[in-house]
Length: 335
Image (cartoon, rainbow, N blue to C red; front, side, top):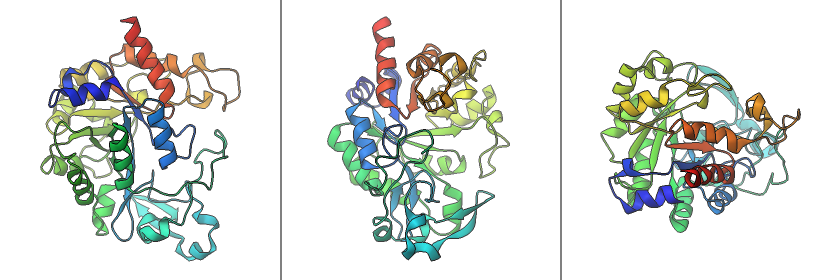
């Protein structure tokens, strides 16, 4: 975990980090149900520098780690008869979504649910039903116990503000409680929205990351498109409030295509670059790195990561932290 150690040894000098950081995307989510203590613990054991909790609030305002506030894909809520009446349809960021939502459950109720694999056709389900939904406080405690960082994402912040459950205040309160509200703390806060990050800029010294997708635009309407944010002018505007960007990996290199200039352009604007998401299954790899025809089989993920490391990324999100550590360390040995 040399990337994180460098960060801690040299407070305020994050730009001096030599090794790209390995960010465990929802934990070791390729091997355990995502956003569970088991997934985060395995990621730590495999050498991840940071663990990533996506954050959504409960009805009583407690932040929990779930990829979405709609939880039927990642918990057993749909087969729990006591909660059958909670199924509903809501409009989230302009799209209609049906299911069960964290904001309709108290923390005590959520704690009775058990996690399940979100991609059962590609990954095993042996661990379904074993783990509960963790709170952000529990994730932070685990990270501090083992000396790694946290990389929380605020999910749908504008939506939650609109229903009176804004997430910035409890997020910052939890970080302050453990002394992780400084610029040199082992924390990054990320969001796909823009105004959310700008508000956070005025409230915390913690480093902020502007997430970007290969298509579409921030749901808060702050800019016309993610593509517009990747121009030199767009990146300069991002640098006014963010420490770095978290682009979809296709924005840097789309499969076998010639790489774009995004990494170099971001660095020229003074931004770090942490692309997402690197996964081992053939279904997610470019054709030249696949192993056979089975979409579930694991291909040469380490080689894909190496391609991006050669382009100069400063860190990366992966569902398979051990592969990420091996790829990062191989590059270090080759230098």
